[in-house]
Length: 399
Image 1 (cartoon, helix red, strand yellow):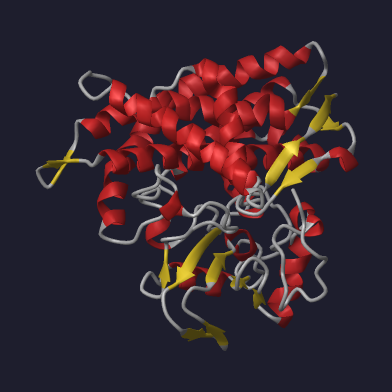
Image 2 (cartoon, rainbow, N blue to C red):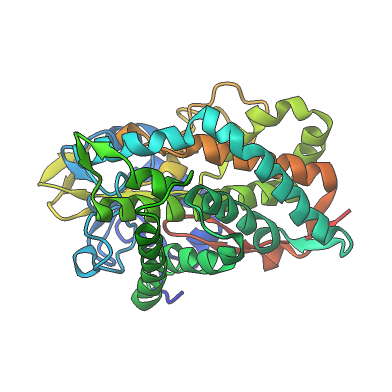
């Protein structure tokens, strides 16, 4: 990605796309919490960056002053100029009442019961991906494994052929990882949007067990769901369900590759898996969201103006030492863990059950087949950041 000028003062000129921040943001958050817990910047427009758990969760729940009309950390494509975004991407980019009924339609597809039906497919997929790499004795745990899982699971939910997985992976990366390249973002969004629009038109008068067909045959207050709302929900399911989860999987494997004691313990004590997954989500929360300030307001001494961007730094909140003991340490048996990796308030991730299952199964199947592994070259790991943080190149050697 293209970068702007180096940062001299992180309290008044932060840059979430700074190379050092993308690679290792944790020291920056520690510095800001103790000196200026809500940083400000005028790069790419005026924005605010809270870093404490209390501030992030309080602001996330204030839907009156902070609108979800713009959730992009870095603006690239103007929604009102994009013909496929008439409704935005509800429910995540909408406020009540649109948020309320669109979220209600999606929730049953990501319930505990429904997610359990996706697990056998996910487990078989993970096993086959690892088996394909065993003879080589090494793999790119990001590109060859983590990135291959969520796109196929979400594809099954939307009724998308598995052979298009790589195409959708490319489009999703265009949208989320190249925010400072408007043409690339638009290419990805249009690719996803027009493909799904064709699927909506194909399935209008047919039966099926996929999410798109379900939405086409659903009514809200006696009226069919608007096609553009269906499109927005389908695009959101694709984008939000892919890069976020593969980033969590990749970060977890990076941790286990670089922390031998934790890897050995999780192999020896598989009963810790559920607790460990929550801790890995806390420590390496992948997603940062944004809100639009709806009117002039002062929050904790910060004079926020209408039109400013508020960056909800959920990953930093999860590292707040006032809430989590030894916050910068991964403790696989951490019991008290009120993390906000999936957000907070009415926009808390609707697909959290699915993401947890995919992450758990991905780590379980990996450790079953590859109980010992390490980074091929720590300096060669490539991280993406901004909206979603996670490794994009993660070469590991088995044994």
